[in-house]
Length: 164
View 1 (cartoon, rainbow, N blue to C red):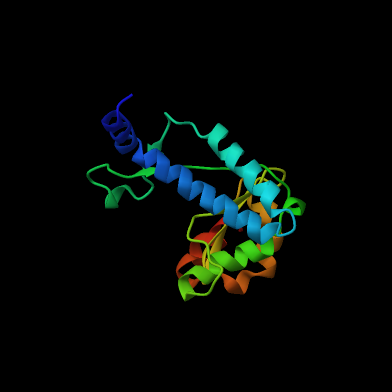
View 2 (view 1 turned 90 degrees about the vertical axis):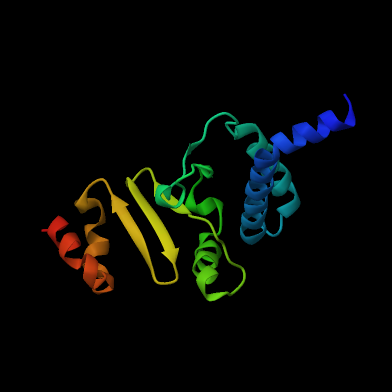
């Protein structure tokens, strides 16, 4: 294959190369925060996992469609099935909150914690707040009762109506 052919292939594949680099970089950061003792082994495992599990043909629409009228952006989704005992989630939560205030380490990605057993989704969007979703109000009633004063005023009526 000629040199120009390789350049053309690289040029046509640049979005996938960038995706692989960004996703691998994110997984490497998480490995470094969660498992500093076994970092090298985890990096190798995560790189292999990332490469093998990416669905190279399937993408979903950009999550902020109003910002993408020309449809040039794509959303890529990655997941890791694990238990809370498998990683140090407290440093990860702190890193998510650190992004807006410019403190390191920080994470600039949307990270959702999904509890399959409780059927809940937990998402910290920045240092000011989080969302907790559930398939049933009863699943998270204890959280609603305990942290009711944390509910933002503009959400209060709608949330209170759910828990009546």
